[in-house]
Image 1 (cartoon, helix red, strand yellow):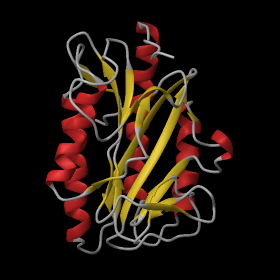
Image 2 (cartoon, one colour; image 1 turned 135 degrees about the vertical axis):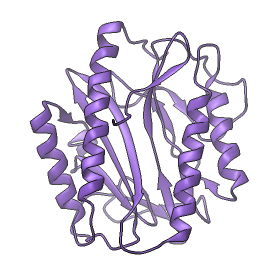
Image 3 (cartoon, helix red, strand yellow; image 1 turned 90 degrees about the vertical axis):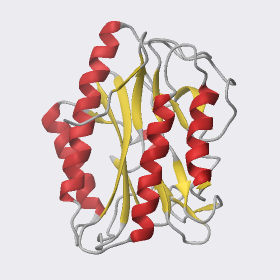
Image 4 (cartoon, one colour; image 1 turned 180 degrees about the vertical axis):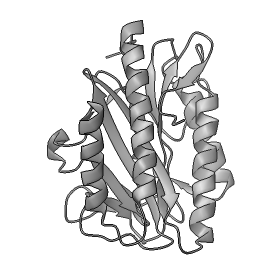
Length: 251
């Protein structure tokens, strides 16, 4: 099934939704101080959604019990918010989907909890951000999904890190996961062509020392097999006639 192009009205709703999501993630980052439990960040997200007239997309999706995924250190993705108290120097990825008037944006913010230097996490974070920028830079009509994938892969491998290959980006909008799948590895010029009106979730997912993962006992949280650091970072992007627009940027 091809990616469903969004019309101008849908794009405007996704713009508003993306802005609210971006501001929400910034507020969660500000609240993520040492000692706060990840379940408290989840509760804050739900309150902010209520205040903004949006719905937390993840909550109840395939029975997921949280409004956010709060992955810390070796946790790669899909970590359920709980009793864990953030510690100085923790590497945190908060992934959140938000729905407004039936349309969805999806983004992940990653950061290091203040109070302790963590050079390994700092470098991984910088490479993750660079890989995301490189992928987004490839987005314009006529390019192909493989161009995004290749750009992300090049940055990650040049830094000596590992693409976690079974976790991918995707189309987003009317559903949380739409075609096309956007791998974080690939070849230039391959895959579906990009067209104006496409809305895409671009999300490098990177392991510090390995691409191998395990699923924890909660059947949701995916972590690195060797306990080394990992990172996820993500924006929702609109393909425009001229190029692209990042819908999940905060002011």
